[in-house]
View (cartoon, rainbow, N blue to C red):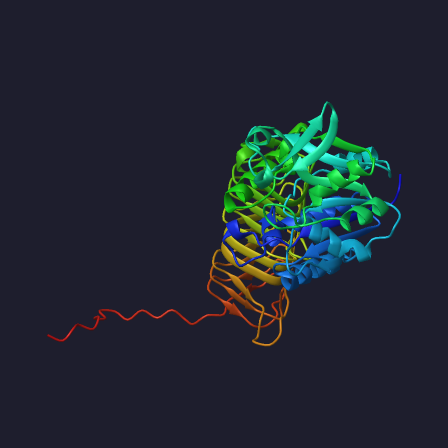
Length: 465
């Protein structure tokens, strides 16, 4: 195999998207369209990746640079196409960045679902000597260049706007992907002209030039046409989103995951599942998520960057977002419904977190419970603690965060405020509606609230007539 260089065309305006955002930065499964293409190219161990930018070039280049830095991966090279004078002109801008040896693989930044295996086969067919094109049979070929053959041999590609009525009835189309030996690519691009209906430099004209030079031209047909479908409108973007999500859902179900409805499942990152995992309707997974054996995820949950251990149950409408530090849920824990776990939430085994409870940067040891309407932030909660409804840790003094420590077997009464930094001693009890500002001793009852006063025969004020 020769070295592979990748050129990704990402300069188009995307007029039909009707958006100020450059088309290749529109998102599919949580990532920009062009990011999908770059990830696929990287899987080929490409020697270099060149992204040709034009419309919104500054925005596209900044976004891809930031994305590469965040992933600690190489930043692609960029070539500017200004003005945009066609696909051949776009590739011409990348030529100074391409060596004379090797094979160039030309991809499109708005075709996100192409598979590495398909591209690998295309490079192999080129073999460092031939021009290899990726073609497909399309029932509705409008907008695509048609592959013209003489027997099995490819003799030309004609663009849709330049095709005759007879040629437009051809259903084998050029998908926009090709593999070309670098030296030949440079020779043929130098001979392109603008003699066509749009006055542009067509990349597809190199097929005619290759044949004139006696080079071999091969068309490799892809059967899974969703791989080569591009995004030109919000309708097409939504259709590819569903196709991609269905592909991911099927892969998980083939591993044994039970997904209630694959049409209502979204994976926008990486999801690892052990045996007998169940996922209900309308769940969204982002970042890196792992689900242990027998985990059950209820309907309408959003889970990002979390490790959920075996036997845990995430009830419906729960929002878990670990961001950079992650969230951990221990074996057999119960979370939700309507709970929110933020970065640094670390729940031990058999912990119960109930409805409208928010946890951030806090650890809960085995068997701790916060079942209703509560907040735990910057806290260490011991085993078997019962944290009452309406209680909060006041962890922020307006300038700095402080930590609350609740030792084992503590009972926190409802509507209490624990003002950090503070420690509640082991086995202690905090009376309901108390505001605790000082450390409490073990096994003590601590109450901090005003004495109740009842005034008999008290009359409410009355409106003046």
